[in-house]
Figure 1 (spheres, helix red, strand yellow):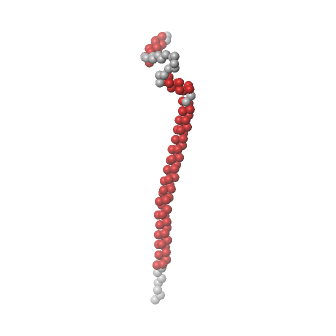
Figure 2 (cartoon, rainbow, N blue to C red):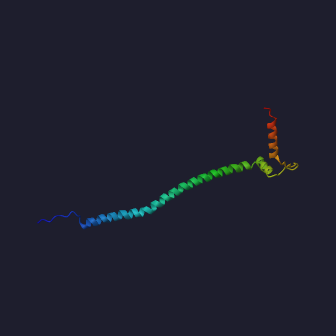
Figure 3 (cartoon, helix red, strand yellow):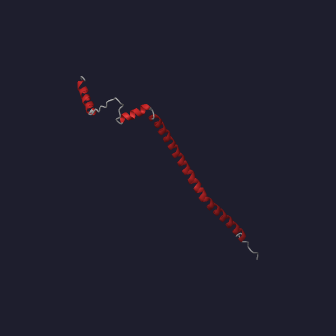
Length: 114
């Protein structure tokens, strides 16, 4: 009686196939962590670039404001807002301006002919 050949490949072929599968799995595992770190770092770099751009814009705005406030006119304006006066000038403090404006507005409304 002739021996039927089995459809199963020899053990050495199976061992080579499993070794190849194991090698692919190991290589994939070894690439996973560096690849994940690379992608996370690239995302972080994009976020940092955006932040640096915003900070650079803020710096330009602050430098512009500093340049504008360093002029003599701007310094005088700031000093007047703080209540400083030049030598020889007299400081007058006027109170009740909102009430006065309200009173003038009511007089102007009543004076308009209808």
